Image (cartoon, rainbow, N blue to C red; front, top):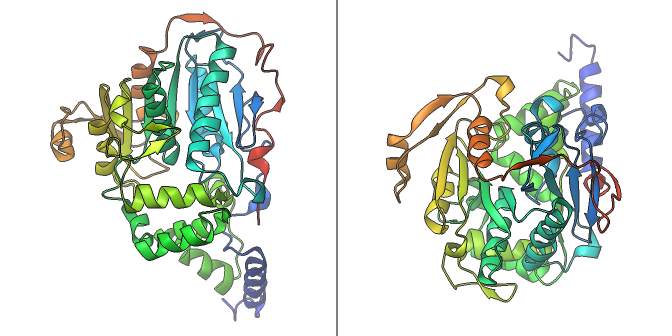
Length: 416
């Protein structure tokens, strides 16, 4: 290629290398092709509440009637929420609105030094609990249906355990997507967690500081080096090519920082010591944590090829939570298995296995169904969504007025 191009490919490759060195990361997509709020994260709505840690978005209804109980979505804080709202054709947010739900979604702030002292409990109280209160105030409902993805599901589950210990019953059901509550088999990330590593983070940023999203982003690339690293080294540097535009990879490169105390706490109590599964072992927000107190119905979804949350680890949530659990296993991996709209006609899922402690026994009895799990989940959620009521004529209410259009300011903040 160098000979055929008269050396142009080498010159272009060197220019690409210099640009990536300056940005501190290997380019995996043409980032100039996308802009948050312009051609990704475009579902209409308004930010109706904000605090230092998060903004709460209420989306515009797409049906004349909606379920009385709203759907509150808790994305992971390790990356940005718009994986759930990439393009209209594959937007989980839009799909939920089309099914007649009033959708609220938490947009976590991308922390800078101003949030260097934020702890795990803050995510529960300032994130989950405040979002529930606002969603109930605006909707006028008796309860919300809550959904959490990945660590967002871990945060949600912990918050619900605290709320139930306090006697609060404002959540009708919980959906967990590729979520770990039992970290005995932590997936590929477990290779990067050890006592020396965790102790180092505790000493450097555990008492105050920021864990840079670039670091975690590079770890994710290393875990899938054959897909997310080496092809771009070869194509960008050796062949002098520019990466193609791809919305999912744009999102993947849009990294998010984490507050050091919160990050170090999760490493210690989750990935290293696996304490969340032990009733009374941890105290959160002044309450002894017992996931068994979360006695609402739960829809626990995992994916067969997930390298971050192995499906058998996700399955263990059904044994830790106190309510009736519906477990569903999707094909593909951590992202593609979740973002699988019915219109695509792709993949499959397994459901209907007999509940029990043995995940493989469940799978042996489960039945495979073609297509998207979204349809199966919607049938499950509809039974817990309450009666139909007229869709709200405006977003927010007298107490919580719209602040700015979705997707809001917080998701647009980037830290290089």
